[in-house]
Amino acid sequence: MTIRGALKRTRSQVLLSLAVAAFGGAVAITGLDHTHYLRTTAAAAKVLPHDTVASADMADSAVDTMTHPSATVAIATIDAAGIDHPLIDHWIKRLTTSLKGDFELSLGRMDRYAGMISDKLAKRDMPHDLIYLAMIESNFNPNAKSHAHAVGLWQFMSATARRFGLKVTGHTDQRRDPARETDAALAYLTLLHKRFGSWYLAAAAYNSGEGTVSRALKRVTGKSTGTDEDFFKILPKLPKETRDYVPKLIASARIAENPAKYGLTPSN
Image 1 (tube, rainbow, N blue to C red):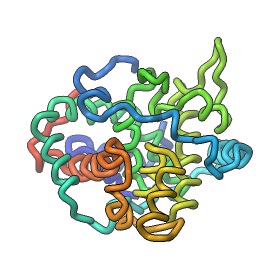
Image 2 (tube, rainbow, N blue to C red; image 1 turned 180 degrees about the horizontal axis):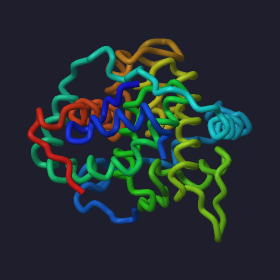
Image 3 (cartoon, rainbow, N blue to C red; image 1 turned 180 degrees about the vertical axis):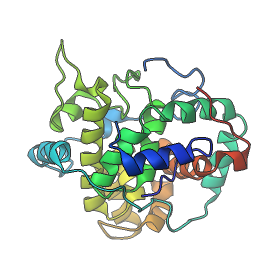
Image 4 (spheres, helix red, strand yellow; image 1 turned 90 degrees about the horizontal axis):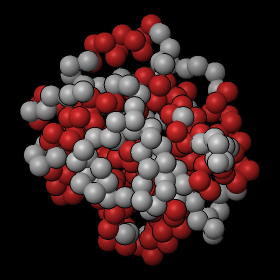
């Protein structure tokens, strides 16, 4: 897929590398942490005791990702419908004004992991824009750790990580391995998409838990699956953090597609 989030400054270079080679940081970005850019993910709720996805299936899914043969880059995007909503506009404004410097730093850091994540998304035929979940979760810092003890690029809690086949012990924490945790995160997102039928709903469930999204859907639409538009229908029934989470994801993708348009210059 064309890299929706490729920066104008490096777009040619990234596209060339995608065409001719296989793809493939512990410095925190001050001000772009969960306190300022995104609130801390309720990671402990990502896989709830009452969630219906079986642990064995999740682990198998993660292993399948690690052994999947190479593929060309996928072309799907999460923003294909171009949905308009005031919250998306709100986050575009914030990310290009009060959070502009922080967002530029995060975009600069993205170059370190964009190739690896994009390749893994392509192997699963998943939208490239999902790379921005890693930005939202950790600002592309593989050593990021939340106050709730979620760790890594994708901010997995230890129990969730183990369910997806990651080793978390006193001596080894594979959540800090960007490639392995990416495999686990994409396996989980794939299952969420299969369950809910929408990438926006999958992202919402990644943030707040499957049970939260399922209950909101049934309350508002009477169904167990839905569309991207349904995310905005159930939005009032979701936690505040989740109401912002998906619009921030969409806003990040739109800005990063053409940062110069918004007066941004990625920095390192």
